[in-house]
Every structure is written in C-alpha cells, then in structure tokens.
Length: 252
Image 1 (cartoon, rainbow, N blue to C red):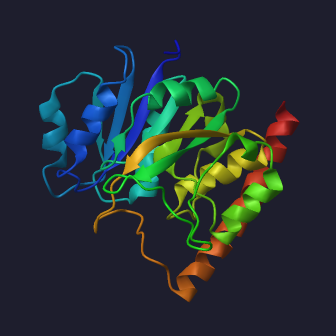
Image 2: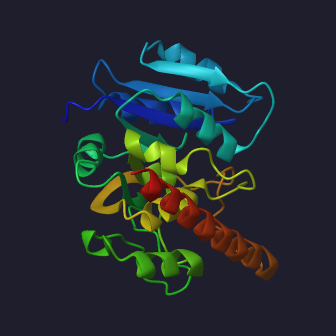
C-alpha cells in the first residue's frame, strides 16, 4: 500500500442498519495512521452509538447540531480531513478488497479519480438511464474533457462520490462547495476536476452499492421538472468549475 496518509470521509444520517458493516469493510484496509472522519447529520436513530461501539481510535465522529443535508455534511467531513488522500464513503455500501490501494495508487497520476461500482445484491453493474447499457468508467476516458462534461450534462456519467478519491492538492479547487449546491456533490467534484484536467478513471470495481428506500440519492427516475432543474444546476456548476480553474491557473 502507498505510504500516503489516508482520510476516509463519511456522512451519516439514520444509518444504524448498515453503518457497522460498511465501517468493517473500510477498517480492514486502513493502516494505523489513517483516519475515518464521520460527520453525523443529527441522526435520530442509533447511528452514532453503532459507530462508537466499534471502539476504533481511527474513527472520529463529528455531530451536526441540526440537520444540514448530506452535501454539507460531506463538505464538512472533507474540510476536517488531514490525510494526503481523501476517499469518500457512503454509510451503507461495502468496499471491495483492494479499493484503498487501487485508488491511492491512481492519485499518483491524477488529483481526482473515479472508479466503478456494482450493485451489492445482484453483483450487476449500474446501467445508464439513457441507453440501458452497463454504466462503466475506463482509463480511456482520461483527458476527454468535452466528452466527459457532455455525459455529465446529459445525465449519462457514472460519477459517484462513494467511488472517488482526491489528493489533498485538489481540495482547494472543490472546496468550498458552491453555496447553491444541495445535491450531487459528486458531480460537482467530477465537473471541477474535469474542467481543470485533473480527473482520472479507474476501471476497478471499488464499491458494492446497497440500494434501499432510504438512499440519499434515489435510483428512481426523475420527473421532467426535476430533471430540467438538475441540468440547469449542472450547467451552473460547469461555469463555476471553469471560473475556479482559471483562477487556479493564474495563481500557478
């Protein structure tokens, strides 16, 4: 495993059913100097009790005093991370063997990397809502900025935060999240990294995604109005990404 110090950032909310299993899959891959930064978004169940019962000093829990939503909780967790590489994690999935090593190694070449995932129950890949084909990322997507962004804008890009890793030097680009961002923090990260030429793709399946009624991001198709609002948001994020990229280049 790379010598880079790793921070795993997790946002939790009423996740007591699955969070212990997810944390077990993560802890099995972490070294003694790594950390898991959990921001609990004012859960009303036993989520925090389940986490604290694990009794591992690598897990640090921060509690929001009021519910702020998963986007702001992830933003807070990333801001609290101290590692050289930040890996994002949902509360209810499972990591696959070798995830940490593969994603940390990929950040040697790319400041932000995105990998593939499969459904936990079936083992099948996610499928594109537009084409019905398996939704996959490949290293051949590296550097295809226009194509990648068009896929994001079309809703046909499988960028999920739970399958991402960021090098510390990328955090100044993605943080703070835009103030108007209330959903799709993962698409913001992918958009910003793609605009700056920092985005890499890892073919490995690094996450087994658990789909259930309480997922923060629904697998159900959106209505026309919601889909239109989402596209307008993504256009706005693309403009912000280009603005920040230009600032970054002027400072270089």
